[in-house]
Length: 51
Image (cartoon, rainbow, N blue to C red; front, side, top):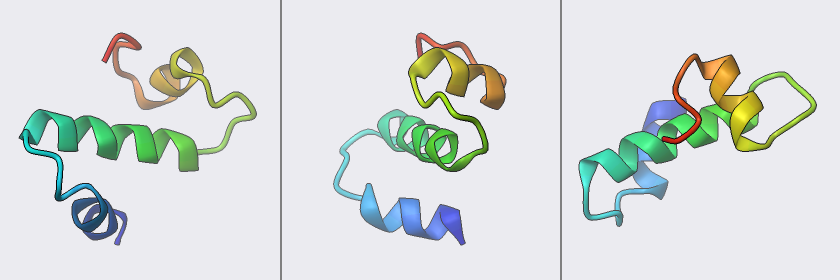
């Protein structure tokens, strides 16, 4: 359900890598955890925070 929502919301982004990163960012915002800055979200998603 989240994937279809993100696909619709970010469909205007021209590059597929931007859409993938938008999906990761959205998932990070919706996950448990008090801190919503890039490093804690990246740690919870198990990805590099530079993405």
